[in-house]
Amino acid sequence: MGSGIAQVFAQAGFSVMAVDIERARLDRARRNIEQSLTKFQEKGKLTAADRDAALSRLQTATSLDVLGHADLIVEAIVEDVQAKRTLFNDLDAIARRDAILATNTSSISITTLGAVTNRPDKVLGLHFMNPVPLMPLVELIRGQVTSQESVSAATEVCRRLGKTVVEAADYPGFIANRILMPMINEAIYAVMEGVGSCEAIDTVMKLGMNHPMGPLTLADFIGLDVCLAVLNVLHEGLGDPKYRPCPLLRRMVAAGHLGRKSGQGFYTY
Image (tube, rainbow, N blue to C red; front, side, top):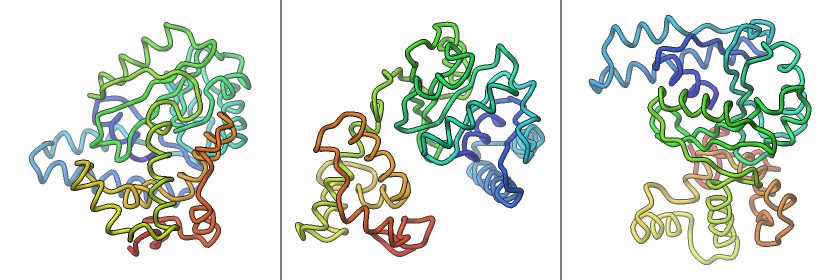
């Protein structure tokens, strides 16, 4: 997600600084961005000059200190509330007082993250869809005290990225995952209970419901650990048993079967 977000900003003409604690991840991210831009070029959606210009606007660093002059900072780290709160506290100390701090969280409270800063009015959610360069939607989530000025500025930035912005309230899962994750969870229950094979369940949803990919394939693509984290947020935040993560999902995550990124999930990659 981080590399995809960096790519769309660079393509749209913004100067981008991608930061990670590990240089190896940054090098991999840059390679992924180069490959993605090359594919756009090969398909005729991007000229060679535009590709090179986008790459020239992308820099990388392993220290947050380089973000002191940023206008907008978009966080895309692990889906863990304590890790994000720690990061937002650090960013608040480094960033300009007028800088907007955004999170790509798919479920965690924006208000909770903004509360650890001295600028909760400038903290909001920008939930990009995966893969970011291809998916046109961004969920924009306003916290309890996020200002209209911040929302308007973030909306304009997303429009410059060529994205469609949909505002969502600060409730667990927002709109996308409040609806998507229970469907994925139910598909996993159907596997566990022997209702159908993974292939059968995905085929029904693709051919019967016209979904571009089945829920189990999608879960593997998202990452089963991420699915579990979002369902835990929904279950804890809303207190409704209908969001209880399927035991099979918990077991697969415990076994390290996380989907595409681990090579094994509901399918083998």
